[in-house]
Image (tube, rainbow, N blue to C red; front, side):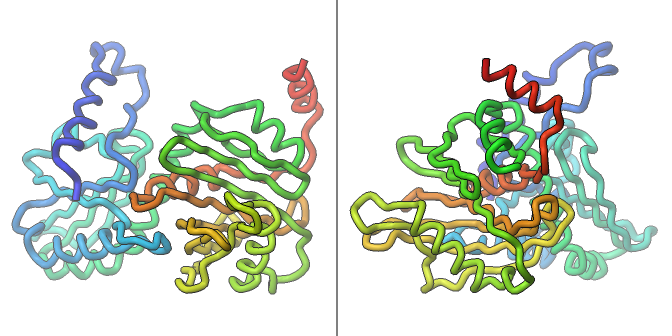
Length: 345
């Protein structure tokens, strides 16, 4: 549940960052959206919120996030009534608006960047509460996905402002991969078919691996084969803190697997837990494996977090955003090569 103090503080910042005179408002773009990572606000009357409708929303969007190894919700869900839904709350990044209008038919409206950007607003309208509940049950999975996509876009947009161009150039030249590498990350290892990015603040650790191999057939997309490939890579490249220790996949908790779209192509997403062989370390990971048609190769992109006994959901979501910034390229244009050479001088 959203903490009122934190929400009001984040919204108060909007006043400071968006205040301007009328002439400026006419030409400037929409303000940045408010709220924290994986937070959504439901706008409806108290009667609807306190009914089975509100209960179903909290159960579905607040369900346990998969593959974390600890209980954290998919979304932090908060509620506000229509009479309080003014300019400040309209700038929240994820808004679900529920309206009961007896004179109207059942309908759902999806719109991006209505009052702020990046933002996604979903409005469900029904003539009575029963039909509203039916509509909600029908649409909730799609709503979950569009809100998650909105979160990724926000992360990518924020990280583009912090991008380390020198690192992205190195990765592009070595692996034919374009991506965002925000400040704080550094290259721990870079080879033709393997990249390890690390971020190591005092109390936690984030890592991203990207590794490739020639594409042969669709059997390579079987989850067991992806995990086997992952384990061979981590044993070789991700050592633990003592001799003969290395990262591997935790087999006691079955990873959660799903088919997704990545760069408009097919991909397999796996969420699970990693652990360190011969040492007490572990945490969650997300792995996305896809086919890079431009280079005829299988590419696996893997983000993992170490943050013992503390919340990990948002840190993993940050890595997911970075992974979804990735694009595959073939050969650089002559202009790109000249620009990269000039930057090295």
